[in-house]
Image: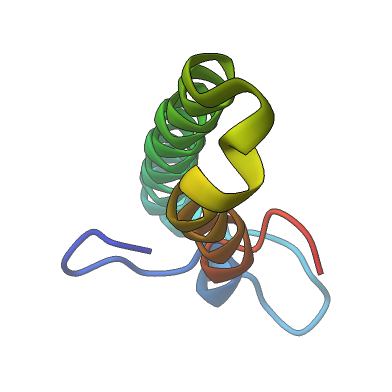
Length: 85
């Protein structure tokens, strides 16, 4: 994730997959941070999607040539942030 000092929630689980009582607060904070980071990534994707949509509307029949950079940025962002495999 993008946050400094981020600890993945799975580190608070024991071998059986349970969360010890003393780790529950840290686990919740970690899950919350992971969720916030993902929402930021989703919003970034929405901004790029809107940029592609606006370009398609503006360029009309020439969108394949004139919007290529925007589409590539959108696809690369999805791959980088693991929105699809």
